[in-house]
Length: 563
Ligand code: GTP
Ligand code: MG
Image 1: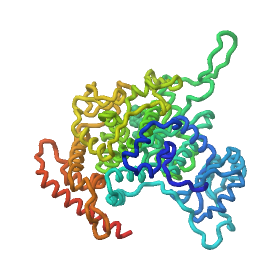
Image 2 (image 1 turned 30 degrees about the horizontal axis):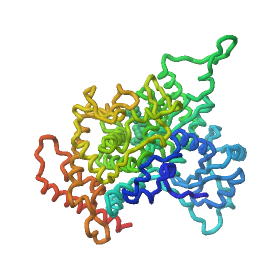
Image 3 (image 1 turned 180 degrees about the horizontal axis):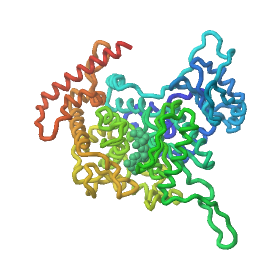
Image 4 (image 1 turned 60 degrees about the horizontal axis):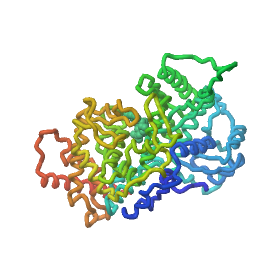
């Protein structure tokens, strides 16, 4: 099939359909039960990486005839999948059924000769389709159907959410709009595979794996692409020496530490990406960071990329988040809702600093779900107990073992709605004893803080580390203040149910989640007020909130009408 339907790969993998997400909570029971046969993170990743190896990325003239394009390419072999998207021009991702097709394709592909410039003769899988005349001249030529790779703007999002009929539907809808599409995930794996081709010039057996939100189930369209240069699988590393007799080993350069080796590898690969990597621009080597990385923009995909090496623990936390997201459909929905809420009020930011990161925020949601009276998520210690011999994993002396087979996990029957969970999330963190307690998802309960950081979230795989060490008191205060205001808002009749009548154009003023996302709400609700400052009485605040929402609704309506 040329154009697969727009489903998140994650939903499909887990058998969660969009329609299923919208059914009544009581019907969710079946989905809450663990499912046999769900693929492990590692299996999914290997399959996707193999698909990416058989794929190419082709820049096309904007009015390329899809049929002729497919016919032209299928001379090299069967095509499994093909889709188009726009990013600085029109691009096509083409996945062949067999790897041999690429050999044939490469044989028929020319290295360009350019006037007044010279080309680096690096044969990558990023190609350009040139039209020498006859192919696309037929009349009535139209542009190919392009798959969206970005999310809807905030104003449109608020508008769309306001038209839903319950907060549960609002949260599900937000998840559907924000989550990565099947095509976007394919593109992310393909970019990793293109990077692997560059690194493979030095390390032919290397792999480049995506990690973080691109693959943990919590990624939003447009999120960065975190990549891990994996050299662990290089053969010879695990070769056992014979007790007696001859044996051979490689002579190698040596450095003072693992970190120094990682830095030198990333420095060289970063240089290659910069000098030889087509489409890779703005390459920065950030080698002195706690986790050394090479950062660049991959223009053809539009992804901001971070390439790291020797970062296996991040791979493990990605796997843990993936597992948690697959255990209960509400986990991902709540994380999407909370992340979006936090971003809309600048609680999180794309700029590094004293802000709470998306990763920390996600761990906070997981912790909250472990703390329900009937827990929705199990503790990491429980997941470790269920681990089989193949799951054993120790990284830098830290035991990172946990089960990979989801079907072994038994969950209790919690039937809370997303609305209840969102409300309680705000109440939970609006009154959490951050001054004394640390958040610990390994134990699934708060523990006394071991340091003075305002926010302490224990690294699940290294008890001595705090994943939110960067957060300062001001940012934590803003988060707590906003949680309280949001909890309060969701208790008000004016906000927790759709208004009876829409505005003239049929558009409703923001309510529920849409109201929580409206920037004017936090201002009107006095979130920015400092501690000790006397608040307006609730009735006054409701009045100003309603005023601000009316304004919002008016603006939103005119926006919608203009379309
Ligand atoms: P967004 O990029 O914001 O969408 O989320 P992300 O989860 O990808 O976060 P980010 O790109 O900052 O980091 C990528 C991954 O690195 C995360 O998913 C984690 O697995 C890991 N990571 C990030 N920050 C930390 C941290 O402070 N401690 C640990 N242990 N892992 C982290
Ligand atoms: Mg990321």
